[in-house]
Image (cartoon, rainbow, N blue to C red; front, side, top):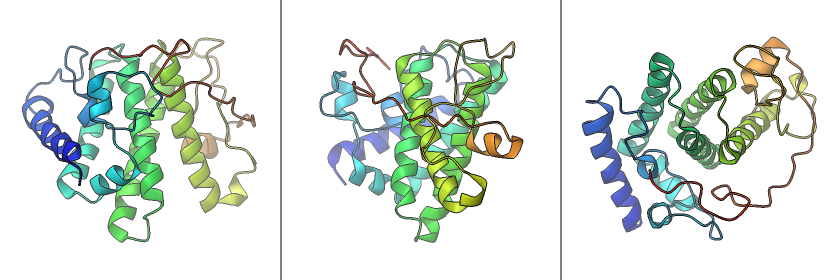
Length: 235
């Protein structure tokens, strides 16, 4: 395990014990912890902060973290607590953090999908997907102030879950291409003109039509905007 990953675990444990467990308002944007609570890989060409670069994790790092009991248990609990706080206290108008959580989940699901022959990783993989569906469901119904990074997180995670479900139950899913987006019905919480993904389980069990589109190629990094400037100065 690389030194920065060990440091990441130490910071995660400290933040969970001293902030997540002790401060009921830990979800507010005055606290900055995304780098080690929702870790993900920062692409080499992304214009990001030094802290984001330092705590970037690649595929091997992600695999190591999946096999680290203390980290992965805290990771799952942290996402569960964060979503629970948003549901209890309402949306915190911090789409960048939510987007990074979605992208982190996407990365951990993709890597763990390759390791499901291990019963322990398989159980983790299933829990990750449960949390992913909860996050997508919350986003589809509660979040209006979207950003390019948020939309990327929604699309990546939706495609990952859709691909997994297609492999398991091909007779229930007819689309040949993973949907880039799914059109939400017009409701007070989903204004007309805003397109957001529906969690895969919701789309299938409710029979909501899945828009079969070829995803538009992304010309910029997940972590950069169209001008190449960083989307987050601090966390």
